[in-house]
Image (cartoon, rainbow over all chains, first blue to last red; front, side, top):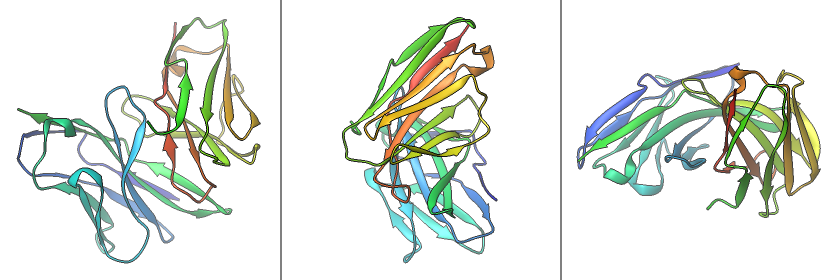
Length: 115
Length: 112
């Protein structure tokens, strides 16, 4: 079984300030980790993913995330946010099961960028 | 624009109505999915189709009935729904069931 915990349901941050959105996971097998973004009135869009290799993963729009196996975390960071980053962010985990990918999503974190 | 189109974007229905949600992709993907997104809950995987065959059904009530007539189209037929079924229903597709998901913009369903 696998699960994802996003500790913060809402994160307000001023424009041009740094931000970190936290994600912790649990799984009994090796995992793939993802961050998705959902802009208002839109579907989910893949921001970045960790499959293997370097633990620091860079994604679109200046976001990056670091896989920490010992802390079972995959926190998302951006050094300077813009108004356009206002959206809901979902952390997700998957493992191989029965030959296909089963993705478990967290409850989401709403990032509110304040001008 | 992800290449996955869902219609209608908004739907209001009574508990005795029958309606359908439609999802279409022209990405050449072979796997399609229905997810339910409710407020303050994780996304719930409802159904997975691979090569038009249902490979996952996550204990979804029978009032939700999926249909995948071909690899480009996926429907979710709705019948005798309850108010707690009100949610955003997201369709997704992927090249195969081990590839990344492409999501549609969702159909916002309200059951009165």
